Amino acid sequence: KPQSWPKLLPRSWFVTGRLPMESPEVSWGPFAVRSRTNLLSSAVAVVESDESVQHANHFLLFDSRERRIHLCRYVMGSPGLCQSSRVVLGPGASSIRAPRQILICSRYSLFSTLEVQQGTARVAVWSLTMPRPGREATCALVDNVEGEGVGDARAIAWLQTEALPWLSQWRDGSVDMAVLAVAMARDVAVFIVSRRTAEAEWSVKQGPRWNVGFSATCLSWSADGSQLLAGGKGQLTCLVWEGPGSQSGEPKVRRLLCAGDCSEVHAVHSAAFLCRITQAAGASDSGGMFLPGGQTIGLERQPGSGGLILEVSDPDEYPSEISSMGSGHFGGLLSSGNMTGLQVTPGRRFLLALRCRPGEDDESEGEVRCFAELEVQGDLLATAPMAQSSGYAVVAEGSYEEASVRLRALPPERLWDGQSKDWPTLATLQLHNDGGRRLWGLALWPGFSGLQVHALLAERGVTALDGQSMRELWHIASALEINLEDFRHADVEAAPDMVDLLKSSSDLARIPELVRDVSEMREELREVRGSVDALRDDFRRLADSLQAVLPSLRRGSVSASAGTPTAAASFALEVPASGRSQWPEESF
Image 1 (cartoon, rainbow, N blue to C red):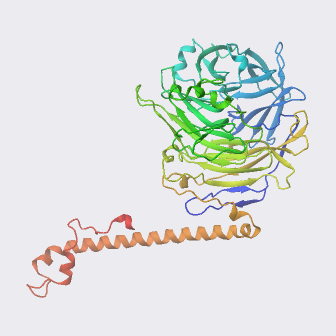
Image 2: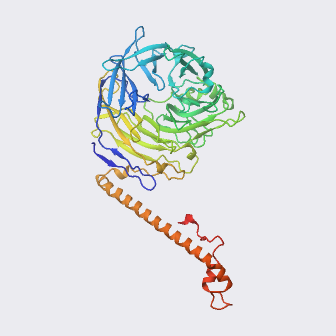
């Protein structure tokens, strides 16, 4: 078994599991893959036909040298953890040349691709046939996504939950229906992928579309499907339905200005999002709203967002030079004067959790809620729910330039308005010690006993930006077992960052001793609590006894003289009629 060491957090934050320092590396083989792309970002958990398989995850890799897609299956508990198969295109299907996104639909054997060549985008939907023993996986083109503006598409996203009630009008007698959202130059459109029977062919048709006013570069549905968030340079737009059971197909549109480039969006909790926002080097800390390129405007920022976003209810409220220049409602913020957009190497990166809450009725606009922003150094991001009972989410963050991963806890939405605005640090993992490898993929997947951190590593080379270079991809996994009892209370204090306590070898040597001390302290506290419970029972019995003799004491049968009450009688007069002690139970 790999060597492991226990992780200790003080006070009420205890990670009782073990984080492997060295876990076995498994090779996927050599691939030529696109640089600075999270290869595990589109992975989905699947249900295997083999009942003995409890956890399996699928993702697709595109080899840019062979121009071929590979289906990768990570099956826990099997002799071959990593199973890869080339995906053979069916007859008549046009080749896939340079996809920006390859997304698997978790509900059906479908995947979608987004390619951009010479400024023109192509979005396609494919059916996928799993490989049989000794054979390769196959795929067939369902259809190219057609519609006005699709040639300007820059992001796609599958709805990974059951189709919402307001989409029933598009079902048209189909038994199976998947929903694909496409972000275009100024609009976001929904496309319906459906079939009438389980044996019938899939078809694609355009559904509703909405104007967001700018060219979005990232897109995500909320986990419950009630919200759709589009992000880009300087702007965010959230489409909010009343809830998962809403019958109304017309969402409320919430428009936000963003102090930077929203380059990545992930669904967290049931109806919230985690955004990665990058700012150009030299960002100002002035009191105004800092925007990409260096311009600052003196507008009131969104409460709780640290100045990263600002909700705009009516574009007409702001000066015409802001709302009329460039593309979108607020294009002037990005293109006026000497503004040049974000630099290639951003100066600062932030994580911001937000949710657009719908109004209670048609007259109410609702509100935008944010948790405190967190400045990070990395540019890989993965999220997963910790457990339904805790309400917390785990956020993994890493960098393409190194092989370390930082794990933090994002509190549930009910705690976002509290006094604590910290992101508790759960652990920092160093996945490779000699510095010869770096991250090419990061994900959080379910394991046999909880969440696991999964990463793809590749050799660090001089041609880091060369997508044609073949690199061996290594898969490494680390278990993260968390004591959920520490996350079920709303008043839990955020734990301080323990990374500094674990840096030196002397600290590492003391960890087992500290764990034993904490365990002994817990046992002693249990013994004290038992003694206090016994003492409480003794007081109750004393009070009952005094209550039993109280009538005779009042008649003076026990007193030494009829005119002078005894000390026992004086004490008995203080016992309440209920016969119970005056001391509150919670004091024990």
